Length: 302
Image (cartoon, rainbow, N blue to C red; front, side, top):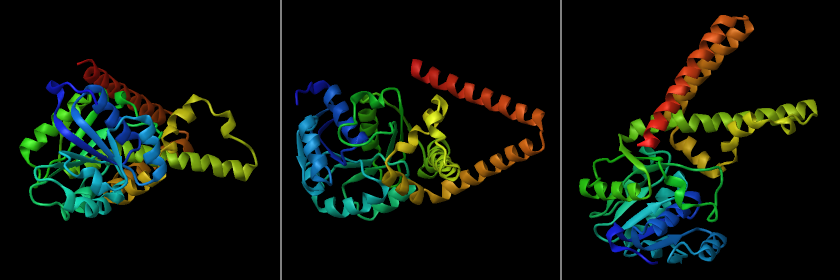
């Protein structure tokens, strides 16, 4: 890999899991020249072979232990429920001073999984680059995935501050804005802005499908942009989302209960023909969404 030494943050980065996020990180490192070498590991032969053909890693290993040997930064890009298994495999092969981070959409459960296997002299910095598409696999990644997106890091008691600053620089070089917060706050925030919308999209597609079967009529062939845009995320990796909901159960149920209360309120206003109340709710939510859009545009313009 041709590199410019002034941009290098880590000598060797090991990426465990070569799906959308892992392959995008590898491509981003390659494009921005922020590591001398990128190693990778994927569970299946097909994924490893495809990643080799695409050529965005220096070497791809058939074991996670092989990939992390001598790595300065190890990025776990696997489903949330797989982290403990990976740590058991790599814990004896980590070099002193290495940083482990992850990209999972849940943080408290991941800390619990990884912390028990963390060797002395190795720092774990839980992370979550908030970026993605509905696609998966080693061919789905692209270097620009992280541009002007937010990365949340959730340091805890075993996180070294100097290593934290180094990881912040890494994500910034990939084009991200970086914020830090507690693991508990992260899980509540993501349950609200990501996990609930995915759950609703999954359920909406399922609801439409059940109605089609009941009525023996293809409703969804008439789908306009709204239905397809809203349910886009229902095409996401089912194993990944299974693990997210199980491992962020407490926060998801809290937000889901609030959402159900809101739906019940809407249902009652529709049943009672309360047009004024419905208009008021829709007007306020439009204002709130426009405010969110303005905030995002302001961040992206900076």
